[in-house]
Length: 136
Image (cartoon, rainbow, N blue to C red; front, side, top):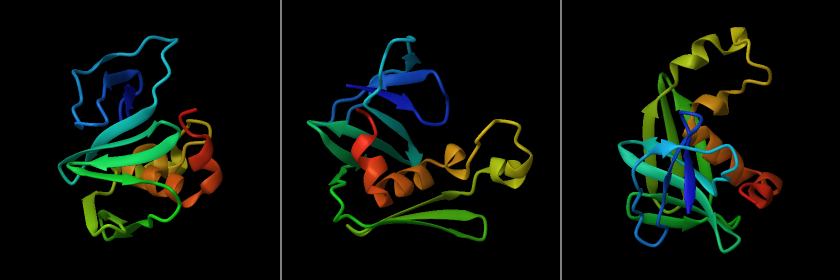
């Protein structure tokens, strides 16, 4: 399946959900529709994707079905973002520098989750409507 790089628009890679293997990055064509996004959190390659009409999160060797029963929380402690997944995983990463000037961003509708993959994941997992329609 094709997944898009979260922090660099227009780039993506092939992803094998069974093995977790991510192929080499390449530019995405205008007609290609990714079935997920990937990034790095706490040094772990993390992929949010849809397969067989189910939303999944894979980080390292952990693969979690986001079926509404998985609790995912994002919070900021000082200058660190912490993403906690109910399966006992805690991923931490520096708060995005872009947040410092988010109020002055000239991009229409720019939001904090646009710059933080962990926050994006948490927001999707906590919103059943968004979770149901993403990557369709």
